[in-house]
Amino acid sequence: MTALAAYALECEGAGFVVHSEMDPNAPTRNRTCRSSSRQELMSRAGSRYAPSSPCEGLGWIEEGEGRAVFIGKPCDVAAAQEARVRNRKLDEKLGLVLTFFCAGTPSEQGTFDLISSLGVDPEEVTELHYRGAGWPGRFQVSTDRASPAASMSYRESWGSLTGYRSLRCHLCVDGLGRMADISCGDGWHMYGEAESTGRDGAENTGWSLLLVNTERGREVVKGAIEAGYLSVAPSNADSVFDAQPLLERRRVVFGRLLALRALLIPVPKYKGFSLLRGFWHLSFEAKLRSVVGTMWRAVKRGWWRRRTLPGAKCE
Image (tube, rainbow, N blue to C red; front, side, top):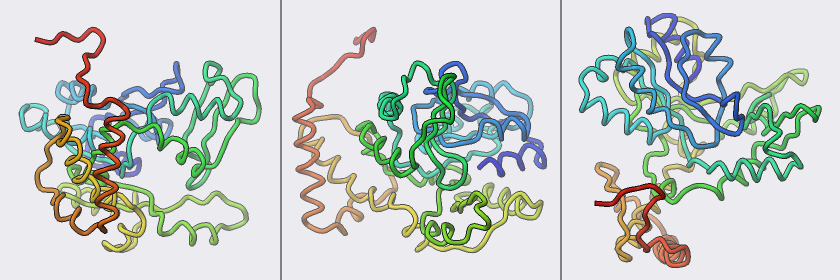
């Protein structure tokens, strides 16, 4: 995504890129930012497994000069695409929409607990990277008092963070980001091969999958390849299934929605995702687990109780 955004800035005349970065004043958090150069993009690049809100930057795009690039989670992209339908000026300024494969966003508490497990006080953190220094990289935390940075493997850190995802993330059907012009994600099917082909201990730069969803996305990818911003090889649907289990996760969503409806709990509505057909392909045991398991969690956690957020006004 960084390469595609840089291409849009340097070759297509995009004014800036709206995306998320580590908040330098609170490294455990994210903030929405604008990048107008390759240097800014590179300094802010990296996975951020914590809440972010890039849609708050849509106003910058609407009021900015020229067309801009938007990068967000699939749910952010869905919101941005809906907003452009309702706002002609935003639609004209939104030049390229990029997203990444998403398996859910852990809460900030997940990051706090992960940092604490390394023996570090979250209040003392000066820099935090969820990945980096190779592929898939390591979770690294820096403080003014500790050198080198405390760290753990990506698999350990993500394995811990998955337990902090919200209910809404477990009901998501678009982990592959099909509403974006282009979506990108780890090519995990190449992980074993990549591990065995490193040279002289050099960092493994890894593989990414690239899914083109629109004609606009196709134009950008073609231009980025011709200009040398991307180096690509052909792939196919089987590679996506092998590399990313997100489509398999979608199949259980129908059962979860069914369980919540049975308890009169409000649920989102989805159009065009063939949820029933996907659910039908699951084994009987998997179907039963998705329905009964969701009902058990809903009752145990009190999801059926109506809540009012602090400070909210109900009319």
